[in-house]
Image 1: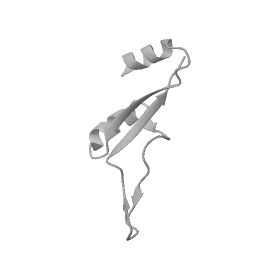
Image 2 (image 1 turned 135 degrees about the horizontal axis):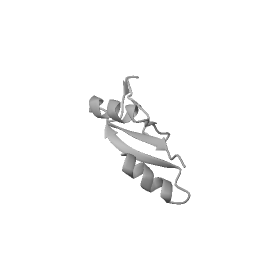
Image 3 (image 1 turned 30 degrees about the horizontal axis):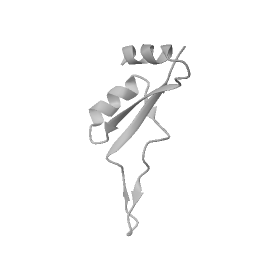
Image 4 (image 1 turned 180 degrees about the vertical axis):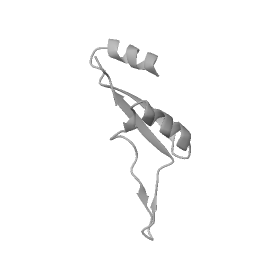
Length: 68
C-alpha cells in the first residue's frame, strides 16, 4: 500500500488513494484503517427500506490523502 501511495504522490494533481473493501471483511477494513484509510465521501450510504429498517451497503470506499 505504501508503494501505491508513493506512486500517487508522483502523479500531479492526485489528491488521494482510494480502495473498495467489502463491509463483511471486518479484518480487511480494520487493516486499512490502521494504515490511515478512512471512509470516503463517495462510499455508498445505508439504504432505508420501506419498513424503516436501515441496511448497510455491502462495500465501503476508503481513501487516504497523498502526502507530498
